[in-house]
Image (cartoon, one colour):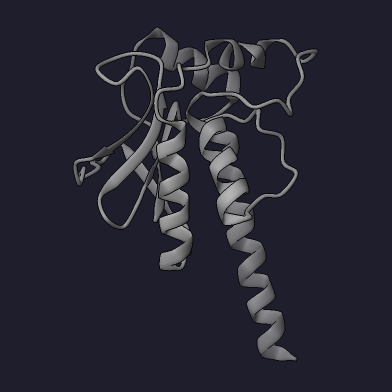
Length: 159
């Protein structure tokens, strides 16, 4: 299971997302080992939240972060993803990045927030972290978690 982050060309919304969230990424998807992928999109063929089983091969504009998971964890996460299919894309949540007075803990249905919600509820990752997160914020959060795991492994090997 892996997260894939998009940094390639895009429209004005893509550019605004990158500008406001201070990073190269404008979209994130969760790809399962079986080739299915879970995402939410505000435009294009797949508007809203979807699970698509197309064994997509991601190209040079995508960066990947592996999410360690047992088969059971991954199966449970995919089942949960199917319960989220059909939610409309959360433009309100996405636009609320511009307004700090809007609650950051409420559930939102745009790409990075819906994936973080799944990771929290089914993978027990990033407990308590605000769901109002950008693709760039999620990428940084994953890198921080990877570093913490490596540090823990080093400490355990020394002890």
